[in-house]
Length: 179
Image (cartoon, rainbow, N blue to C red; front, side, top):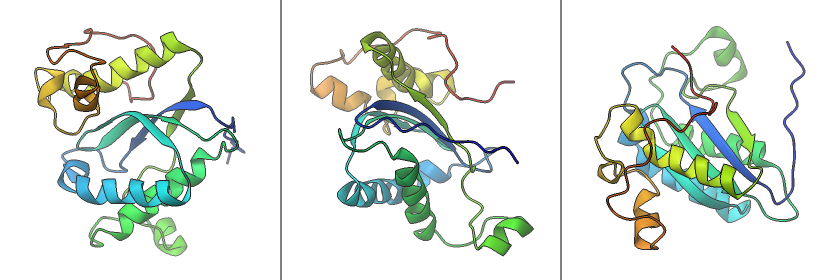
């Protein structure tokens, strides 16, 4: 197995893609969005971070976080969020022998995609990508029609117009599976 090390950049802003282990035909994240929100808030209370933008889709999510100036440990936060969310759900998912042996649930993919935001342009591209994602995946025809998105906060704060449509293709590699 590769010895993969995640970078730690205290105070940095990061883009993440986090996916369920089983992505086909599930609505798990939107069906349990309240439990996901609770898991995030619980972790934020003990390990602060700012959610700059976020979208929750049926089987994956994207978000931008800014970490505190003295802290770069996003992997700890994701581990706790995944664990808290998983504990809030009944045990009914298929689990591999190795997950059973380690006492792990079979809800989340182990890896997640992270990208260190480099500048304001990079930040803006990722915010657009997050808000456009429900349209990209065919869940809605307009970004404002998806209820599980920070798009609505951006509209309330005057950062985006209510009729914002994004761009059809933002370009770039955002951690989504190809094919």
